[in-house]
Length: 208
Image (tube, rainbow, N blue to C red; front, top):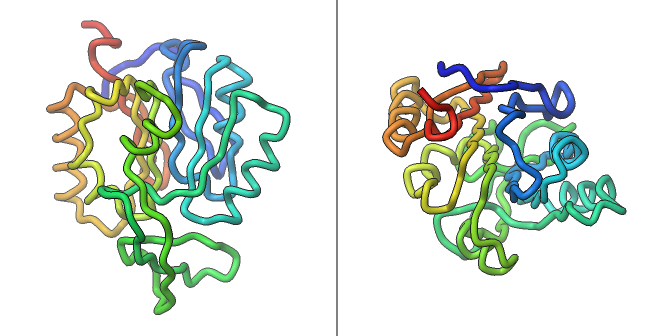
């Protein structure tokens, strides 16, 4: 774990993340994938650092809630999309938890209920939204991270800080391979929260 400048806990205890606050600049564009009904971290980022935040979720109700929570904030927008490796419909499993509306394309839940939802790549969303880069990328995709992340060229996307939640759909070995692949792209881990929320920063920003 590398030492990063100014680590701060941002957002609620449920939906929050630990991020290297001293690296974040007002000019940053932040893609927060997986709103999950809690965009406190998204809005806190704007309040603290003046960044632009795009929030995404596969569940339409979560997007509606995000829009309501962010009303009046021009630097915040919320979009209905399941981040995927290709544009097109995705068959997603609906959670077994009656208190949640979460969905997963990676068979995360103990459920036999499935729905089809719109899948979008980050690149096509960036083109639609007119963004040339993503400075901060947070990914919480309910187990699909093991298939998604190996397809992403984070430096090419402009990512400086990357945060991901790892789920039990992958083995310990697969998690280690994922972290190693991030290291090969220049990203070092700087923070870890319970429920395996990992934050990485590009080592060019961390110095020696």
